[in-house]
Length: 267
Length: 267
Image (tube, rainbow over all chains, first blue to last red; front, side, top):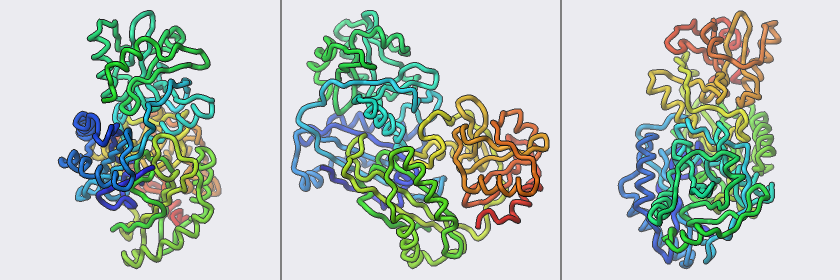
């Protein structure tokens, strides 16, 4: 169930024709967007880095849009809110300096419960280029993630884990990656081209607060072969346990995922 | 001047929210799309490779859309026609199997004359990954090209030349690349992740037909330092001479660009 509301003509939008813009996906719980301010702060930081003007009134726009979308859709307990901001109308590869930004908001109902533990596969392609100026930003050019998920599904798994062009494993197709290796909780550092996940940061803080040994360092394939627990973090699913990795079964949920669930990362 | 016409709700479209789809850009000369069939053939081949269903009636749809767009825009001698095909409504990262494809067509007037010779720079990022499943396809996730052009402009140039992750120079931000090196016309082969350009193929055929020595092989930075003529091929600009490369001036148009102009590649 999807409902949409926009600003500007979407048919001619650079977001549609060039994937030229930014997005955020938020959990909406009982009609309230969760951590909207943190998401828009991240979007503004990406806008500064990539020269995309993020309208100042975006927070109000998103809040205003929700009641209209609910009217059409009812109000599910959990929903996903997608906010896309673009550089405005298509005028070829180069943005039109005078073009007003496009803002397009979609909401879709989610099941009442978060998704179950995931079967994951590590893909050899598509790969993340940590030197790409787009790496680490939620850009509308997201088809490599769609293709990664498609390949994971074709391999009988639920999610794909992506390597960088240097071969280390950086993140999942739509979540950050954590693995317990030799008793240390490891997650790849931001300079591996991974997204600066809001839930990733909250999970790191929660783990450190409980005295857990935590390291932000690159994950090699050997690390994953040795991992005793693996989980993924995202705004929609919180800390999602991985139940198998390249056909190797893992305890799911493991002890850390259970502890993080108690921290209600997704609220 | 832009005019747009679509099929499906673009505000909720996966093309807008994920850059999940394919596009073609055609020259329209005196109201007639140039080589529409060849462009749609390429789009269908990409659709087969990436699992994007390209509607069968697309040729008629594009032809039907033009008169309506002209009514609003007048009929310029030269125009650019953009056709975007998507996997339909946004439903998260995974396509909804039942979703009807989105088709969105935009037209914009071009100046009467093709663009003048270009100043080019070679960028170190963004880079092309020849192993990417998206490489060589005109996917709606095109923001790396937008960013490349932005960086070229910031460096005082008109267009960017892109390297692969292995370091060879593969193509321009929106055109294929040809260089005359040691008397041989060199263009990177398709396995370097470059687009299978329709104008590229026509230029290769025209050069071979006139007895020119032609090689499809990777271009190193040293090759470009030695090149005596460089030009770019695209549907909108035909064979466009490069007048400078990293501040080194080049004869523009060179003899091959002059010869190719006589072949009216853009018709």
